[in-house]
Length: 153
Image (cartoon, rainbow, N blue to C red):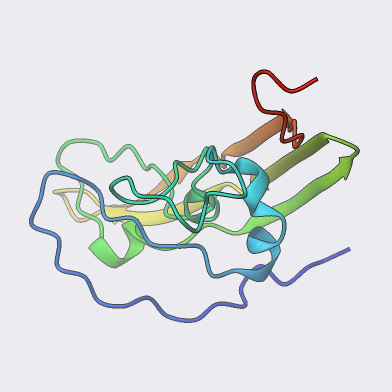
């Protein structure tokens, strides 16, 4: 299988002058399907959530395939656009489902190693490498949907 991880639409432009990272919602179809198992709020109240920022998400899938974490040596210059290039995904697999009151989900993804070219102060060119990352998450959720009220038989 070779799913198309690159089917996306562009994000809105956000100018963030705070100390906190801006959160952008996932738009890749593969990562959207079945993602609700990784939200920590109950399904019934997810639309009526009143807290700041909405429900807590256990996994930020936008980091999968994002820019690599290069360690640039002192005195080396690299293009900023090279540092922000997305990494290639080697593959990803996801399993979600439900059996009675038990819901489950698992996701694994693996990125390819990345390489960019930098220039030392003496003008020589050097390749800088970053190892690809692996992502794994799993969750089991038991939902008791009975509507018993205290005191009912």
